[in-house]
Image (tube, rainbow, N blue to C red; front, top):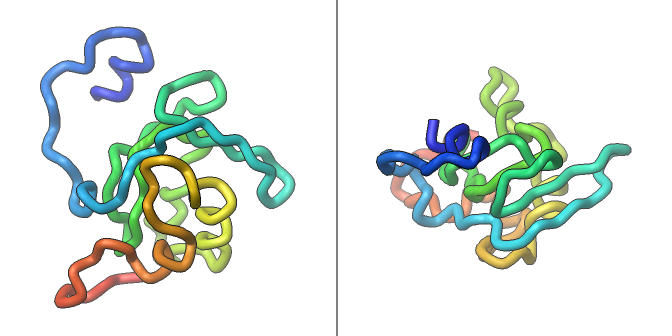
Amino acid sequence: MRAARIADGAGPGAPLPPLAGADTAGAVGATRTVSWGGREASASPTASDDTPHYFPGGRVRGRPVPAGWYSERWWSAADTPEGWSDDAAGYFDTLLAGLPGVPYDGDDFERGHGVDPGVRNPT
């Protein structure tokens, strides 16, 4: 709801509780557009026509997804019985590694950066 309000230029409203892992998932700190798999993929700290999909930051099936606005809901594919695709770490590295606010790379993403090692990591 807050993302929709922000995208519409309204005030964000009351804060929502953070998702699990939001404290270690980071946040997109700069706009980047890359070519991946024959398509353009973008990430940004702000909403735009190119980045209409928001993720509040947290873990999806054990892996971190930084808070930010994206050109596609790339994390939603992991919410299927198959889980993360084989190329998810490569996609992450290409689009997000090295951006300000994202202090880990595709290898760390694949390992579930920020997950408590005492907790089973469902991947």
